[in-house]
Amino acid sequence: MPALSPVPEALQVLLAGACPVTEIEILPLDQALGRVLAETQFSPIAQPPADNSAMDGYALRLDDWQGQAMTVSQRLPAGAVPLALQPGTAARLFTGAEIPPGADAVIMQEETELDEAGRVSFTAPIRPGQNIRPQGGDIAQGAVVVPAGTRLAPAQLGLLASVGIAQVPVFRRLKVALLTTGDELVAPGLPLGPGQIYNSNRTLLTALLTQAGCQVLDCGDVPDTAPATRNALAEAARHADLIISTGGVSVGEEDHVKGAVEALGKLERWAIAIKPGKPFAHGRVGDTPFIGLPGNPISGFVTYAVLVRPYLRARQGMSAALLRPWSLPAGFATKKPGDREEYLRVRLGADGRLEAYPNQGSGVLSSAAWGEGLARVPAGEAVSEGQRLDFFAFADLLN
Image (cartoon, rainbow, N blue to C red; front, side, top):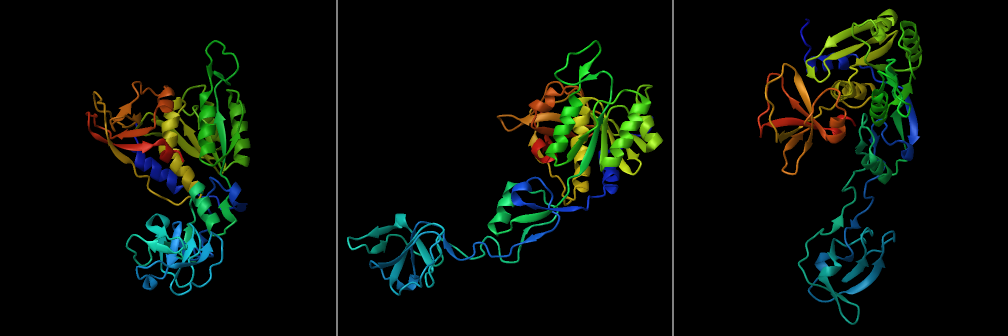
């Protein structure tokens, strides 16, 4: 038996061969959600573009305040152009309104009193600059708004819009061909025959890849024969940046993917020190990279999250960032240590401790639907109740 490859070592090899896409598209912001920014964006303006009020209230020059009621010389809703503040007066203004020249403080209306003549007095201490949002206080003109390599989420798109950027350069989507083989697999919605099972892997991986921002090329139902598998792989290599398969890379007589990849390119099979998901393959079909995932649904899910998603991030041009886990206490215990790094499907309990799904089998897909993330248990360790474990939320792992 060859030695098991540690997870960090396997990931390092994968990332070393991850060549990012280079083609760039220009998209309007409303079409750029989830895309990877190709060029750093700088702010063409200061944000806010001028000093403005953080409150509904009154603006004044602090040196003018002598404890007596002040005349209100102008009224400024948001968007109005202010006049210079007349000496000894205050300006009525509203949240977001530009501060009139000469004013240096805003008093919220809850700390004011109006007399019968409409003059305003202030009932709380005043300090210079209070309740004023300064020009460029959020973003200075010329500052970085969003760096290259960022996957654009709603907050980044809103930020770009706030400084007037209407369109952005993004890398084109990574094209991933998905191949699931096996005559025993049946599409959901069709009746099952003897010995058949529904193909959950196709649906699961299509969703994971789509969520990751990839363009999925479905290779369809591939008959379980060597010629059909070779033809499907060769066709996928002509159109895709990456080919992913599930199952079919072991040494059985019906595992045709292994032989087809070797005939068309190169295949390396690994036994990785990870549970679930020990069997894993990578290589190339022609010049197109290939990854072979285990056929068991949870094995494929875990190896995708731990190994494939970081590889995809690198291929998509995303900036390399170490995924930092949470350290959370276990609300459960395991009986004996394992010989592989194990990823348990868990969720956060009401007491702030991690709960583990009771059946951690590699075919139990319900554990992923139930869970909120993966807890990593180092090889050679058993978990004791209260022990702190590395927790990776699905929202972070799969984004």
